[in-house]
Length: 456
Ligand code: THG
Image 1: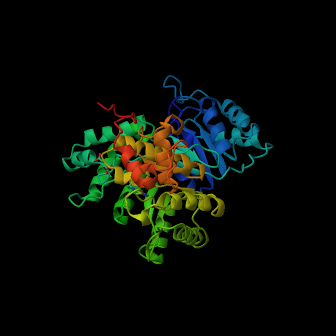
Image 2: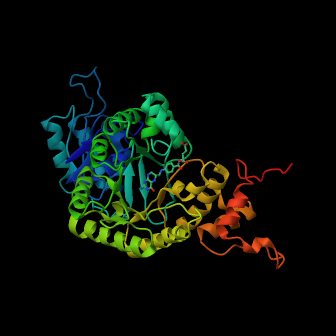
């Protein structure tokens, strides 16, 4: 039985979570009851009890104080047994709860009065809750069918940002925290944290940074994605976070025993997992390999480990395209089609990926990269991609892209022959260029912000 205490009209428990965030954090323990107690007394608890009763697919238990504490009264509390009992009875009649009791200021007489009052009231019916990925920081983040795409902030990553790496290596943690804050302000609904750097005690840095994040409500309101290739770093991170986090990542790379061991621990910590399309033979690069690995991992997780399918987030590997190497040209299509297949064939599982990887060959050209991310996401989201690790605030709007840029980007992402203007002459040298060549040429004419450079 798990009970929380909402301490004031903010509707948050002592550690800062809203009641739904709290429920999302503890639901994996499959408690017999979840509930609220103490604090405000029944009257002021009502909206929070009502909310819990709607969202929890287990029994709800409520044991309020005998009203608000009143140091002037003899017992320290104002409510008589009859008053508390009538308030609790109203909750029961409204269908809010299954188990009742009393907390501070209640006496055996209060409990007897409550028991008497509830004698003939039927218990709450436990509702069926829609299947969703239900994460939390201080606030909930629920992701299911029909919900919007989720942006995961990529910048708090020592391998993904030179600036962040410098701050962590210099132990400038206040400045490093502001990187996390900016990501949230720019629309990141999850923050990815990665401390995998050879010059760093990654485990200590992960623990320190997550604990500092937890003390900043404007950052810790969102869930964390704990990103490391070392399990011990991930597990140390899991021990820090209050909410329901996402582990990034586990895979079958080191064999099935290790995969299952890590998955069982994630389940026990109540974390969702990113599962990379990676097995004993290597990282999946084609549609066939991506779907084969994801299906196999899904069956093991769901059938053998008992992992909730809605807590599985597949990453079918986003690789760089337009690199000039022909084997890379179909990577965008392979990811998008694998996403579509996973959505259709692996019920409730989600899809994520490191979006900035796709444009690595345009490093240094932010305008080109932003356009590539925008078009890539447009197609990947349509195919069912749930979330993406992105530079929050740096993803544009598909419809606002310059049409010339958009078609060139679309040509490389969808790996199709160059889309040429209808009026192009038959002997134009444009006809000799590959899709990638046309994009590289055009990218060179771009300046920051996606506008064309003025020719002087
Ligand atoms: N899948 C999963 N996790 C991942 C990845 C993935 N985590 C890491 C990475 N890939 C996603 N994160 C980033 C972060 C930054 C960049 C790319 C991916 C990036 N950074 C600029 C660069 O390198 O050019 C930064 C330049 C700078 O500011 O220093 O592109 O695929 N599950």
